[in-house]
Length: 408
Image (cartoon, rainbow, N blue to C red; front, top):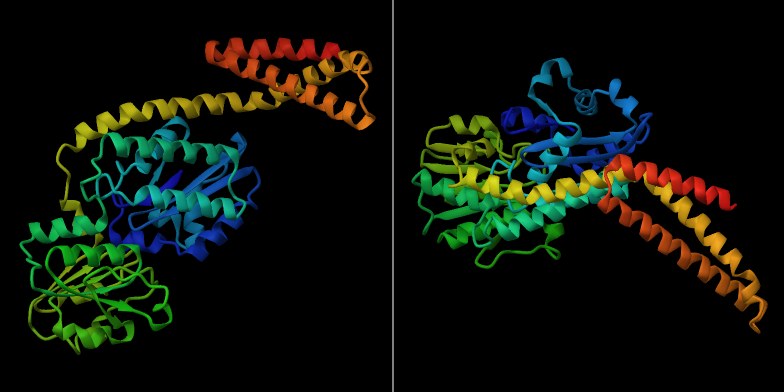
């Protein structure tokens, strides 16, 4: 894995590596053309963009995954290389386990990260870029994350970006009760932000594009204004939140200053790339917060929770490592089982002739016997793995394979 996230890169760098859905789809398709690469998953969220690559060992001797990401974005790796984090092998497995349950998120225990990881896997699968190594890894990580969420990170604690926004407002001494608020964006984060502001007592309006009116979900207590009228609404607002996936600014300094007086207004940008032009923060009376503003928010007891979560995740890491070590033997087990099934069916051929069965019925019974015998032998082989050291298991399979070949 090579990725860029909030720990090393400020928002102005992260937004340059942000990828839209179409960009991710194209990059996944291109990954399939790289010799030796068998799988690719791309995670692109507000706080990180990561390439997960699996393939033949030799490919990583020459493939620079960070450079691959820079190439996709048309940026020089020589200039941005220091912002990247690279993980491989068991370290990468451990990293993904922690990432999937929010232990690596800017908002500690982020509730949305599991969904984001799922989406990344689904997209890779849809593009035909997912191999078994990454499929099983991500599936195991998601299962482990759900377990951690149920055991460690309490469900009644709001660990979303919108929840962190509410905490930020409180710490900055910005009251919301009775204030007029505008939320630009009707996506998941926008709706959560609007609901949070309503809960805090704000008088909330949300923008909506006309062509999305029929399919939109509007949080209870929110009024709706047309997205095209967002600038005209600014003079009436005390607080504006923008949370879209637009690659362009939803508020620019050039247009906004026509509508902004000198009254104090709070602007909160929850998007990557940023929705609100940064220069707006330099205007008199404007307080601008972006995703990096959440660096000041830390959950109490983080280290204790990480230790408990890691203890839970060890089981899932071991489970994956065992699968990974065993995967090369799966074809061998299948071959042994197939040979055993065929031999069993052949040995019963004479007995089957004693029964008054039609030719088709006899063949169906023979195939059923062959399949059943193969399943039993495969189950016995897989059972050996649980009680044997890897080297002993390998020697055992090799011996069984030789014995099965002698039956032919």
